[in-house]
Image (cartoon, rainbow, N blue to C red; front, side):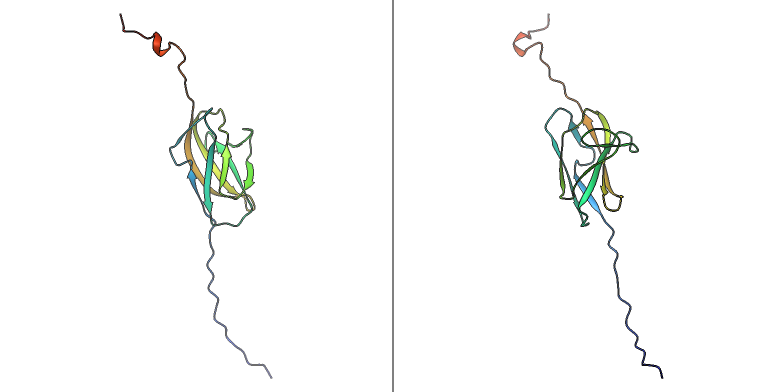
Length: 130
């Protein structure tokens, strides 16, 4: 004969979607080219070893953070990347991608701005208008 059959309850699985939150730069932030380096900061619920970070001027063509060439920069998924801001002034987007899955995890829009230092006339050389 047949053995006894047994019915087991179905397991309940929850599929956790990978997420990343970029906290720096904050949306709408202005980072100055030629100023101090800035930290790109993110938090994630993934255990992937590496992420790929890139930036874009048009939201389509993404560039390596170091060279500015097409592509991305692969870094440890430790939540921070110290970036020497490139001479690429204007509206920009940073993208963080799960390196193991090539899944876009987060993007943020910010601005790269320039700065001007006035060297002449000096404050002592300025007098009243005539």
